[in-house]
Amino acid sequence: MADNDSVNDHLAAFSALLAPEGRALLDVVRDTDPADELAVATRLRREHPVELVSAALGQARLRQRAVAKFGAADAGRMFFTPNGVEQSTRASVAAYRAECFRAAGVRSVADLCCGIGGDAIALARAGIRVLAVDRDPLTAEVARANVASLGLDDLVEVREADVTEVDTSGYDAVFVDPARRGGRGRIFDPEAYSPPLSWAVEAARTAPRAALKIAPGIPHEAIPDDAGAEWISDGGDVKEAVLWFCAGADTGLGTQPGAVRATLLPGPRSLLSRGLPDPEVRPVGRYLYEPDGAVIRAHLVAEVAEHLDGGLIDATIAYVTADEPRQTPYATAYEITDRLPFNVKKLKALLREREVGILTVKKRGSAVEPEELRKKVKPQGPNSATVFLTRVAGAPTMLVGRPV
Image (spheres, rainbow, N blue to C red):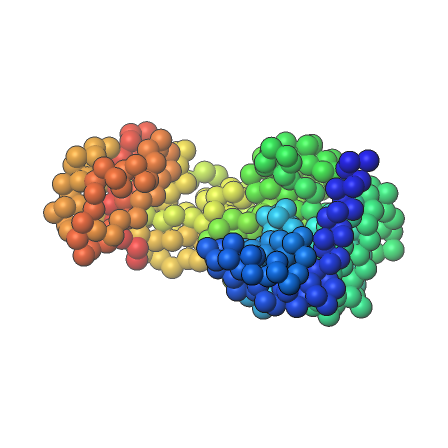
């Protein structure tokens, strides 16, 4: 009974936000600075119910957080829950995936575990009809409000239901985004997802086409043989991995069964695995390349190294070294000016000599935290440099350089 009362209370509070008084209050608190919340709340509670003022201020905070994912225009019109902001797909990634479906001829998608509706919105904007399903009553209401606020409710049906009981046979494709967070934070075991990855895979196999959103850290050995795997980064940050399924020979979704791909946004730019052997280890050359995180997660460093005519600085470290500069969207290039064995005093002296005050510290294969090193070397001066804490042929090493 207590749980039902709590659910009803949350639904009632959200319904109040959708009413004219609630919407007017949302406009009033839209740009409230967190530092001014107490004063604003005190003033507004003289004219509005306490619960409504609290709900409006809470929603304003969530909208401010959501700008990074949805942009200011959409975030300012949408509604959110704390979990919804945290777990929803970034709009640019959702739009890319929706375009993959559209280009494959998909005209209808069953979006299972739809959350607050981020993917359903992107699919609808691509002209695709969507059934958006979530079992949480509040989340389903928020998704329904979002598609209505953005004028997409003619293309999106939001249904509160258990996704394992929904008939998806009338849809061209299925998209599943299992919950990967619990009461204690991130869930790393795919079988602890809600619903479990095994259920999502079987649901995908019964559909003409399907995509499953999964955590980018999923082990490659956990990827089914009949799925293509894609790792996606946006602005250099790895956002997710996707398993693509397509019945029969016609894939049409950009990733063949068994294939592996890294896609970088904006763009998109995609790099496909060619099954190359691991690159050879070479002495550090003049240039160091840091592959994009999606490339590393997809195990495609060898493809990048081949393009750069480079090798690895260490067999276990995903830094590529080369003697010549070459352009590639799949890695960031640095010109290496100095190589030191790991020695903080020598590094501090070098940086002081070079008058380096703007210091970027990167690490791979080192236990030292960048901020810890920064405090010890105390950079001062007008110049900038990048320090790589890493291993070279097994030895702890500091590489100093600058972006090309």
